[in-house]
Length: 404
Length: 182
Image (tube, rainbow over all chains, first blue to last red):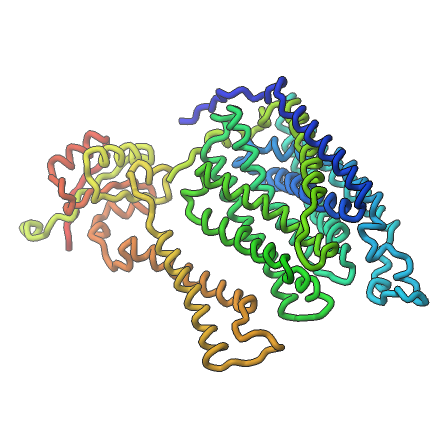
């Protein structure tokens, strides 16, 4: 009955591909332009940089989550696409460097709680609420926390990547249990560190406001857009003629189903956060949404409802749609764009209170960081096979077929 | 037994050795052009729906219809209650308080979808049905244990007893018998 599926594709990303070089140039030009922005308009540049940084970091973090869930559940559905998130995760250690501009500019970016006069009862600037949060919101502890986060992420991402490469090279199936042993304790570590990182990066921009579910909200937006990025990555590789027979309809269908599932999850989390604050109507909580529903910010708010939930939900509801390349690409692009706009909508109203105000620095920092992020990806992706060869569950994954 | 003469034929039942033989037999039955037939097995068999060339289930559309009904029903109910019939000012929020209505709208959408799924499934399966002529066949009890059956119904436009028997024999049935309406 069972026969070993054979792989007809070449599994090596072409070594002479121009893609990494192009991405490096694009990224370097983007970052240089952003540097000019830093010299001319520091506060605007820091905000723009933060939005793009959170966008790409979120995708890297969601990648590691996916790899850990895949290991811990002994899944076989995604073995053929697992190398992509593994590489994203393996690059997190280098991505730490991208955080340095934010660390350097933190007294500007987070001046709502880094200004020492806020904590001085004799100063006219004294802020009773922020002073009450001093134990958490202070510069040394902020820096210590960032070191802890990036140490956890860099280490786990690197470990899981390395283990997978070693399994490929040696064919030692015992390494799968090592991967599970790394993943099991790393999932709660990741959950906590990602939640606290989102408090630090985005929530503390407005230190009066708090939402206890902001951490899971950040996970939800990142994880939803991660699946969209995965779909786009797979179609990009296939458009270059790579892995065309290895990643089949069944695997693409699964990615579509994940995108659909986490579209619903996103809507549930984002709406839960909104509803409780809206209904309780406490001034210190409601103001945050009030600012984001006034002026032109409300267009993004309603846009999120329509383009990040209603449209993907209705389009992907029918299972036929979940494997149609053009439908998936369209939904994935919409979700990725909305993901950027959502982070923008979270961070930017602090800078321009009364409406959307795009600047060229938003664009250059996105292109710069994006170029570097994907340059790092393709550089690492070239080094080894594009799928985890010798994985014990690879055959089972390849055998998967799509049926009515 | 002269009484059998008066009973009308319900169909012809064939038993097969194992799931593989059953899947192959279903393919032959489809190939021969029969469409009023069904297979009976103790557990779900992977690929049997494909072998039987079953069309995609219409259940999804039934569920979607119910979901729309639940969605609009919930909105209509709450609109009637809190805007028309008994408007109450609750902490200065508008009567048409869309965010606060979402949980109930969601619940009713899900509730009616679930009803649509369960009862729609009953409807598409022709349930509830209190008896089936197959239950009179002593051998058919094996369908809940270790028997793999195909039954072509006499209603089928192509049904001809001898041809059906011949088909089952060629397909490798271990046992063939007629089933009569009670």
